Structure formats: structure tokens, C-alpha cells
Length: 248
Ligand SMILES: C[S@@+](CC[C@H](N)C(=O)[O-])C[C@H]1O[C@@H](n2cnc3c(N)ncnc32)[C@H](O)[C@@H]1O
Image 1 (cartoon, rainbow, N blue to C red):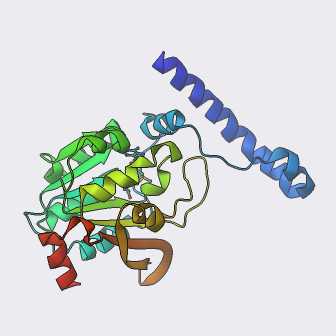
Image 2 (image 1 turned 90 degrees about the horizontal axis):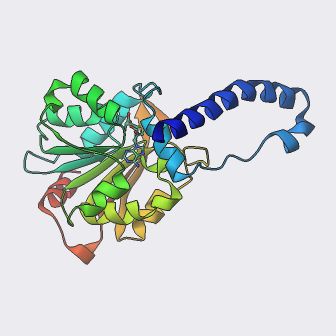
Image 3 (image 1 turned 90 degrees about the vertical axis):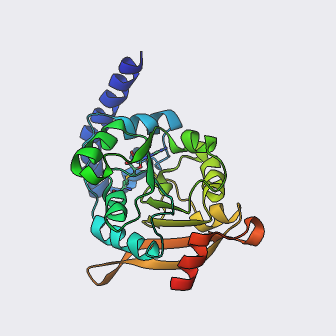
């Protein structure tokens, strides 16, 4: 049944991808037709999102700016040591986790919905061979973990893919660690993205903005933002966080 649904979903996606360029040409030639031909993009259902991210036929490639994102995370995590635990949400091919391990932050965990990405990650980065990976939807797997399981949560170009039905993920992340660093593109509504105001969503659960700055790529400011948030006093401090604040 699952295969039939996936087959149907993939067939409709293929048709859409073939038809869209034609439609775009018509709209470019006669803009008045856009009213009838272009639908506002809406995020797909949670079920379809999960099929999209786990589709074994979707190529998994490193994204642009991966190197700059990894550098920015390392800068933010520079005061963390071997005792600190770091969780990456949507770790993809594992470039950030591998860089953390290479820099001595060895107590890392990833949560990734796509089992093939996890398999590929272990092939690409042998230093992650023994790293604990939670394979499945973050909103479900992380909800089971106790408060303050980690010193730092990181998410690189992942949180804007959170489905509105999974909004509880933000509350979970805010209780799992006293600090969170996210790197994201400007928020937009698309089939696989939602225009979350991450600072506001995490702010509802006691996180406060420490720093918000553009991601620097090859010496130039990019449109992505590195957002660092820490928990307010409500839940108390944390040794890794205090060291990080002292060092930054
Ligand atoms: C745009 S990619 C970013 C990957 C990686 N962080 C990077 O910068 O290369 C988003 C990642 O989040 C994963 N993902 C999407 N929804 C997820 C969910 N609900 N739970 C866990 N991982 C998810 C995808 O499989 C994908 O690997």
C-alpha cells in the first residue's frame, strides 16, 4: 500500500514538473493568464512532506554554502568540549556533525528522517561511524527525550521545512538544550517550506535571541541568517552555555 501511494505521488510530481515549464512560458507570454494558471504554493500535507524527504529516488546532494554553514556553526560551538552533547536536527549528509567531531566535539547525535541520507553520511564520514543517529521524523523522536538532554541544538536549513502540523517541534527543541543555533534562508511559503519566524516560535518557549547575523560566504554577506538563541533564566544556566557566553 505504501509503495502504491509513493508511486502515485511520484507520478503526479513528474507530471507537475513536465507541465510547469510550459505553463511558465504561457504566463510569461501572456501575464494575464497567471490568475488562472498559477496557484499560490501551499505546503503539502505532513504525509506528503515525509514522502518527499524519504523518497529513495530523490538525489541527496550537498547544498550550496555547506562549508560556510559548517564554519559558522563551529564558531558558535567553539567553546564546547568533549563533555557537551550536541544534537543536529535534519543532519542530511552529516557535514556539520563530521566537522564538530573533527574539532573535538565528539558527543554528537543527529536526527534525520531519511535513512538513505544516514547511510550515505556514514559512508562519507567514517568519523561518524559510531555516532548515535535517530532515524525518523524529528517531531516524533525528539518528543520522547528528557529535558536538557543536550548542551546545544543546531539545525542547518532544516527548521523552515517544519510542517505547521509539527509546530510542537519548537517547544521540544527549546526544552532539549539551553542553546540553539539555526542557519536558514529567508522564510518563504513553498511546497516544502513554511515562513516560520523562528525567533518568535522558539521565543514562545523561553528562548531569547543572543545573536542574529547574516551568514558570510566567501567574505560576502549572504541572504541566510545565523540565529543564536539561549534559554531565558526560567530553566537556569548550563556549564556549556556559560562557557560559550564567556568566550563569545
Ligand atoms: C535542506 S536539507 C539540509 C540538510 C543539512 N542540514 C545541510 O545543510 O546540508 C533538510 C534535511 O532535513 C531532513 N528533514 C526534513 N524533515 C525532517 C523531519 N521531520 N525530521 C528529521 N529530519 C528531517 C531532510 O531529510 C534533509 O536531510
